[in-house]
Image (cartoon, rainbow, N blue to C red; front, side, top):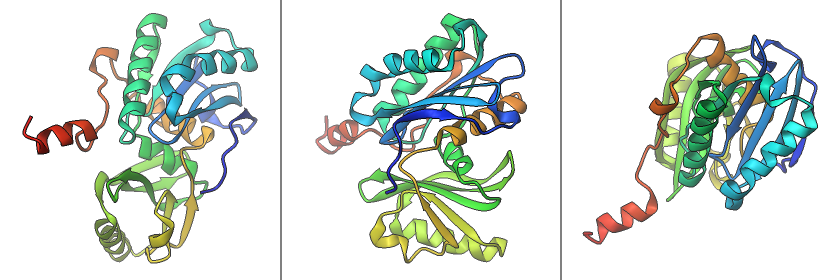
Amino acid sequence: MEASPREGVSGERGDMMGGADGAILALDLSYPAGVVTLSHEGRISWRRVEGGRRAADLFPLLSEVLAESGVERECITVIGAGRGPGAFTGVRVAVTAAKFLAWAWELSLVAPTSLEAMAFSWRGDGLVCPCMDARRREFYFGLYRREGDLLEVLEGPLLGPEGTLREKMEAWSEEYRDDLFLVGYPDRSIAADLPAKEILPLDGPTPEGLVKAVSAHLREERFVRPLDLLPLYLRRPDAEERRCREGR
């Protein structure tokens, strides 16, 4: 995995960097290296959120981001949350926090999938397969077509083992007759055998990728009512699986 910085400010400009009437607050904790961002007037302030301390660190890091950006809380008009799939605790914490803040601060709420945020973390155009470790020797993945700030969902999100990932990528390469790029976390031992033109290893979405995913939903007016937002789980948590095996 490439090492990821833990905090910073980005100056990349573009329409996706702020809401039409204010700033965008976005968070995604589905990955081992979660991220909380605040984008306003062409700048992104952000912090990485360590997997083991998502619940404890989220709001203190949010306060740091607000202070660093110099943006008043009243200037935030939109909150975006990566709704999964991914780490169960991370998805649950991000969705719950976003629902609470949207309700308490009276913000518009959008919720792209975490794989969309990964797809937008790739800077190229074309076919992209975001992939993340789902444990139990399985992967979360999907197929998307990226064209600038637009992202078309072609298939997914999906869950499957290494063989399914490889078979799907081979089928997509044959069907679309185009180069396929892989972004995220395929195990190093299998990455070389996957039919990808290029592999960009990431342990979570970039701050810019998350903001672009949120902004894409905002432009398309794909708003969600706080009470209607649910985490995207593609399987049951480990504890529930164990209880089922034990007949409890």
